[in-house]
Image 1 (cartoon, helix red, strand yellow):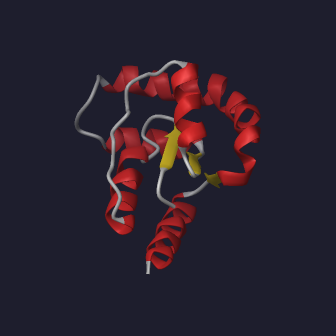
Image 2 (cartoon, helix red, strand yellow):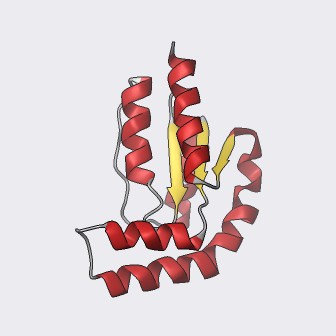
Length: 124
């Protein structure tokens, strides 16, 4: 794992995971948290050797957003998270089929912790 693209809904832990992977794998971390066009996202996914989709339950996203202290107003954040979960999540599965060979789908915080543990072991 040298070039990882991480995608997921708001408050999924994308930035936290990226920082942890960067540290464990000794690779640079490039923040790309802004809204991007589909073409830009596809270029990132094509260039990655590993695509990580953090696909957590909506309740987990909401709980994490409630704990945040920075960013946009909470009401806006929660509305955005719910909309993305309802509208875009179903299309992610279809769109990510073409990356099946390099896709890691994390569905729980526990799976994310285990993924990080495996990444640390891979580095040794």
